[in-house]
Image 1: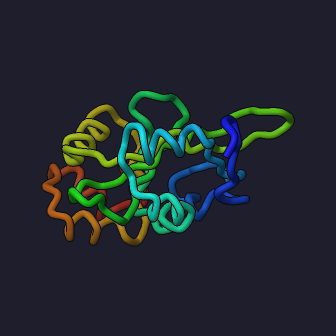
Image 2: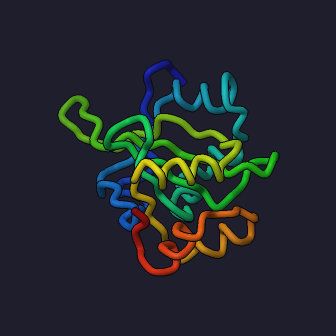
Length: 158
C-alpha cells in the first residue's frame, strides 16, 4: 500500500454516540497502521483487521488528557499482556473538502487504573455504556469510591 493512503474504517462513528464522538466517517492512515503493527505498539494484525468491530464493541470513551477534542476509546478486548487496548480518535480532522474522525493510534495501556484515576482527577469526561461496569469488575480494577458511585448513577462520569 502506498504511503499516505487513507482507509475508511466506517462511514459513521461506530456506535460511539454514547461517548459524544462526532457521527462522521472514521479513517486510519497507512502510516498509522504501520506504526501500530510493526514499529511501535505491536498490536496484532488480526485486531487491526477487525478494528471497526472492536471499536463498535467498546466499553467506554474518555476525553483525551493531552489532545483537546480527541477521544480515547477503550476496547472490550485486552492485549496479550492483559492490558486494556486504547484507540485514540482525533475528531473532525479537516482534509481536502471533507471532515472525518481519524484514528491516530492503537496501543495497550499499562497501569490503566492510574490512567482512569488521573482522568477523573483532572475532570475529564468518562462516558460509559451498558458494558462498562461489568468490564471493570471482570478485569479487577480498583476504583475510588466516588468514581464507582458515579459509574453506577449516571451515563457520564465527571
